[in-house]
Image 1 (cartoon, rainbow, N blue to C red):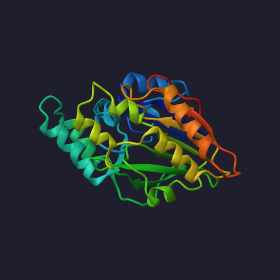
Image 2: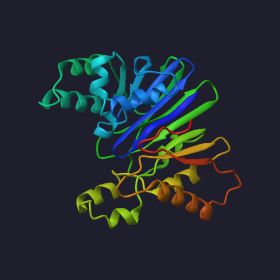
Image 3: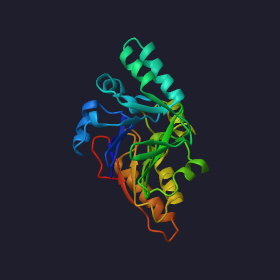
Length: 272
């Protein structure tokens, strides 16, 4: 089993999941060469990908979708509104117009509904709704009868519904997008962008990630990768230290804590 972040951050996101002979990409928000290089590290190639699961339509999650679809016939999975918006983007945007890509999105796509169950060869997966400023979903995966892994990014807050979806995980890629002080005091971000990120349809702060880990921690949870960190309002060191220190100062349970690593923008993680 391989569950690996090829790259994660506000500028681009792609995750690779391999189990037995099944290969899945979750998002394709990196340059296609970066994705191919990352897959090559695990003796895989884009041509061997069985499906691409899209979380939402933002560019940092679909950057290479057009390039991939031009070269390969790969099934796409996303919710209905996301597929519609991507389809329209490649039809209405003159610079991006491509009838081949439109056709493949129309005919090679599978519509996902919240809380539904799907199976791609050896991998079963479950989409669930998140709280973002466009229609957005994330996923949990069942590998065999024992292993459960998940991804949670691009949500402004986490409610009981999402916490329930994350229960029983063995591994999690979790958004730790910003440091609140760095965001509030940023001179590069206008006020409207700060408010968007801080809102219930924005992103998760480092302390939010720590609270989620404490709430879902169980004896089964072995590792959490902090991802989708902002280049402007966070650092890898701040994200890691904030999460670690917050948990150490507030966690009262006797259950051992999972290993915490950081998924970086320009590096492949260890196997999560």
